[in-house]
Image (tube, rainbow, N blue to C red; front, side):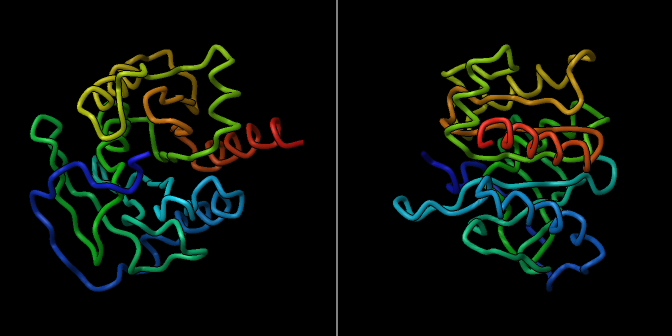
Length: 203
């Protein structure tokens, strides 16, 4: 698993003090729910964080958790940043905030840029959920679309362009073991969908 390894370029980074709480507090509230379920967290064996969450901010801008924050129970303004712009062809992003962006930034961007209805994206990790959803007729990206690859972004873009995708959309990444994306228009409904799937498996 290469989770946590930034595979894109930061074209323009505006380093700032901690972001104002008003900007990130709603996202932190929901991130906390997923962290308690260990769907976002830290792999002790690999010594790497996994999972991340983001929320649309203004138009194509979005707020996302910083890189390698999975080990922290609670985040604050030093652990969130704003993605101002991305360039998929150049595999780059520009950002504003006190920390480096999540390694999955461009995957999240593919959702926001190509589906204007998406307001929250969560990339969770769970072997149980991943295997369970693979056994279902679920949206997925191909095995050859590996983590951080241009092919993965393209596959996510294709899914997001489909006007008939469910809301929230659930996407299994076959080429990124244990990784699942939940993306929806309603922040509450998207988080509730994740918890619903979690409960189906664990209860």
